[in-house]
Length: 264
Image 1 (cartoon, rainbow, N blue to C red):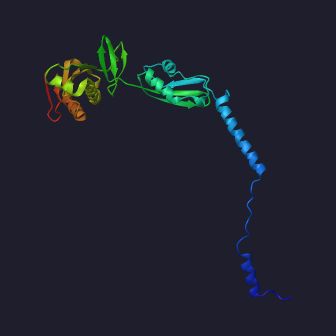
Image 2 (cartoon, rainbow, N blue to C red):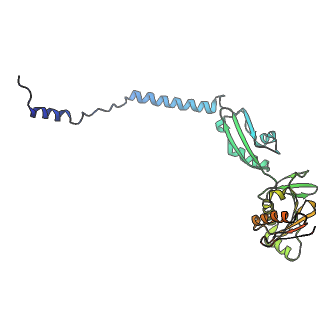
């Protein structure tokens, strides 16, 4: 029997190299679709029951971290977390709002769910930078000028604020222009710029006007600071001046490019 010719082999190769036959897509049967739908419904119902209806994921404990002056018990009481409630339904924003309202000492708080049974409260307390004496007690003022707490004993290392503005002259004009709250913020600004080595020896920050702020240091020393402007430059100048004239009692850095010192 004669073999295939070259032409026949070419035709067969063309036929074998053509496009593959199309595959039919298998359409899920209605029964399969129904089973899948029921399974999804059951899965959703089971998840909802686990989150809201079961005893597995309910609030059993509240942990507190970051406190210094406040106690964890005070924070837990103010937070008023609903123990026994489904963890998923706890309103963390409402807890945060309660804490900030009831405990002004708290600057910020992070309320988180700690699965499967806890609520975590991470607290950041305000730090006093100045104290205002009021009737034998001390109002603590933070770095934003906020009076957030009143204590019977002055914290160590925190200078007192004396706002002694005259009712006449330029000082009175400064008070009318800026207001007492602005002057307090300027004092806070100055307190934040005081060099660390000087801050620990600062007893009082005195404010007579916007441009007349001074520091009373230990050992009867006084620093004329001026306004709260150019605080960084004034801090550097004061540090250098204290080293150059360690026995001086009066230092003037109100114009940091032309400092002065006197007394011994």
